[in-house]
Image (cartoon, rainbow, N blue to C red; front, side, top):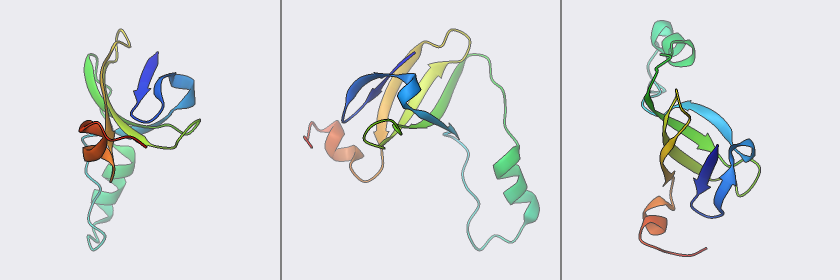
Length: 95
C-alpha cells in the first residue's frame, strides 16, 4: 500500500504508523466521565469499505496525514495533511 506524505511524496505504508480512526473525538480534558474516556480508547468499529484514518510518517518527516481508504481492497482514495502546516501545504507551499 502506498501513502502520500505532503512533504515527502508517495511512500510505502511501512514508513507510516496507524494512529486510529480519524472521526473519533477525544473527550475534553475536564470531562471526568470514565466511560467516555474508556470508549475513546477501546471502542472501535471494524468497517468493511471506506474508512477515514489517521497515519503518521514515523519513518520520515513525522507528519500526520488523514487517509481515506477501502479496508477491503486497501485502495487509498485520498491522503491529506493535517496539523499546523496543512493549509499552507494544500495551497502549494514548500518546506
